[in-house]
Image 1 (cartoon, rainbow, N blue to C red):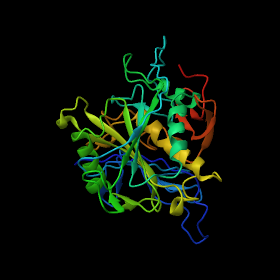
Image 2: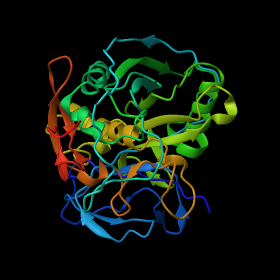
Image 3: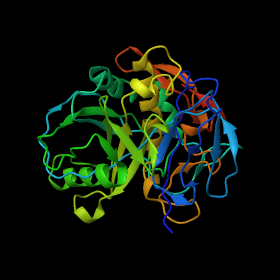
Length: 360
């Protein structure tokens, strides 16, 4: 039976809950089965009081940990009219003389043979209307993909010819009601709405994915998103996912995308501990970005055991961001500005870090 990878990226404590609220919300990790239903996504669930009961599939046991959640979605649409703005960012490939061995410290990430994204190219998709902090996000993606935080991921290579290097922000594509096939509802389902729409965008040439492309969908307020029966801001903060588009004949096998709801409203206080919403948005976005780069094809993994096309993964606790859920840090981007990011796991440091002197 096909298993869908739900990648956990929990954000910060859900401060705006009463004392009567249960101490944690159940979080789904890759290959996790919830109530007998199997899903194929990476979800970052809302954290309450910094604790979550994580029931992991793939032989994983339950554990209690502080988490941050991030989500991926796909939707149905056909042709789209889009406007795109492009910002140039220097992209350099990794040419390290010595790559670290594929060894896993206790509790760390293991390589399962799948692809990594070599030089990520981020194209923001906006849905319906302009989301909050769009200009901030455009700067964020261009800056943090060329930072010491991003350099941590250089240790997670797939082969000597497939390593992780710096990335870039490529532009923004606006998806509106004038876009052919645009879903008219504000209550979206990942399987029934988002994935078919994204597939149609590829078919119609509105978006042109490469092996390095990442399409985070940033939503304005007023939208609710369902993933496997779980709702945005009540169950998860965001997620990333994968669509197999090999049948479309566009030269690449997978489309990598993220679903990032508006972090105000019902998400406020539950998806990050920072006093500024934009910083919690950066934390959630960085969580999904890091997981997409180091484990991009987890959304199409099938079967009851972890294996390719999964890449860097931990059977008990999930992906690079999941191991460090709710731990915010900061990094200086290529523009010289400081940005809030979520700490990510480093095998070389055997812990959660926002920078590392041990990266190759």
